[in-house]
Image 1 (cartoon, rainbow, N blue to C red):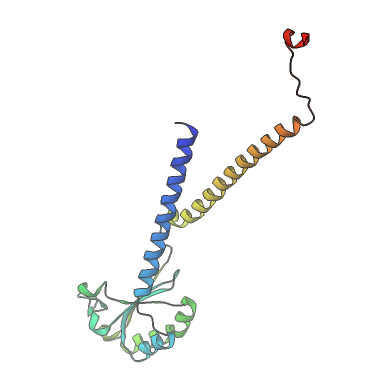
Image 2 (cartoon, rainbow, N blue to C red; image 1 turned 90 degrees about the horizontal axis):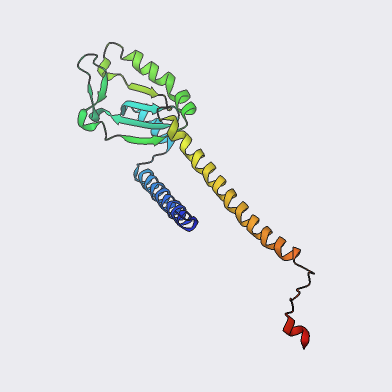
Length: 190
């Protein structure tokens, strides 16, 4: 492959990567826009009015998934309320400040569950999930892509500067030189 073909391949690959990143960003934005968002005080009100039967909180991202009492059923072995099979993917989702949420509700949830210690079907089932469940490669990918783009940009700029300096040096080194023509024997006679 010659140098022009390699440059063409890199430019196509960079264009495709940019288009893919833009489409992925648009998809993520559309997904977040579809989610029902409520105020934090309304969310706490749902817990105060005992409307939430189960929830899962991701401690890293602050993603909160919660189900109401119609969406849960008691587990056959433990009696603890869990989302129904057909309702597992139908949850309300909210992003919260994890420390504030735990501080606001931890004592209330413990008190509620102590009150219904003899009736596990009335206890609120809550689960805190460690947010580092994604692969370290997925977390490293944005840094590698940005670093690669910086390196490629630097290489391209250095090559351009080198070409410019080389052509400038060639011109400056030829400044002031006499351009002599060699005369042939016929020119001398004239």
